[in-house]
Image (cartoon, rainbow, N blue to C red):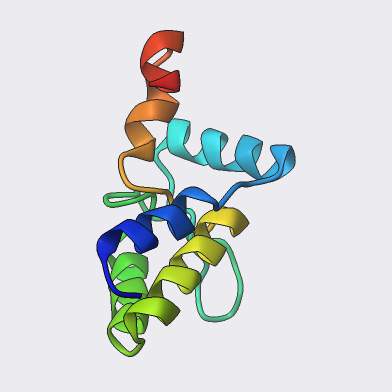
Length: 104
């Protein structure tokens, strides 16, 4: 990818199923991490950034650093679609109950 505009387009295409979106919203409302531990069990730490606890967020960043920009954008889009990470500023949209702000 040559610029951030293409990255933004790829990330904006990332959509979740209704079932995954309901799970994400419930975890965000409770303040819990969206990630999982190495053994596959649910991470029950408090979320701090993009819906992840600091441990899961560091793992996410380490994975991104090992990839090219194109691979990182595709990886991020897959994680957003899977409900494993939130899009940028999505916490605000989920927690804000105003229909005008959520749809802006």
